[in-house]
Amino acid sequence: MPPSRAASCKRISGDDPAISITPTLVSEAELRLRFAKGDYLNRATAGEFGCCLKRSGRADSRDEPPGTRSVVVSYVDEFRHRIFLVHFYLRPDGAVGASGLPDPKWLYENGVVYQSFKPRVAADR
Picture 1 (cartoon, rainbow, N blue to C red):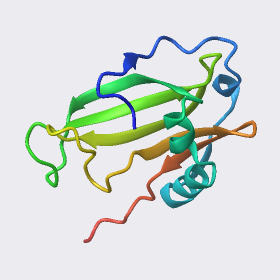
Picture 2 (cartoon, rainbow, N blue to C red):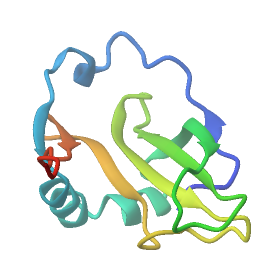
Picture 3 (cartoon, one colour):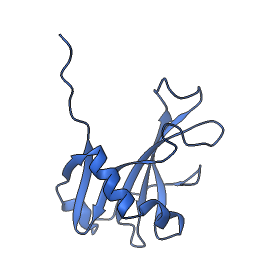
């Protein structure tokens, strides 16, 4: 889990290989599966990746208590190349909201950038 006050992300370096790769769009479920199989969260906790705060703001989820923050954190390798990006709700008591785990949104794995998308649901007429 990222620290509650992660360092801000500096601009990703121009030599970051993931910058020039067009993302492969995958379902949220597929990205979560890749993220879990790669054990990225445990690897980050063990110190393999550093983290930096990408974005933080007031949460707009009705399922979360007042004062909850919506947080996006980027994880980078030792060369400051982005490896993955997660979103989570940080509750006022320090707990992670929703599922209790960060939700992966972007992953650079084996030379491929994977990005999640939500399928559009047709509006009821």
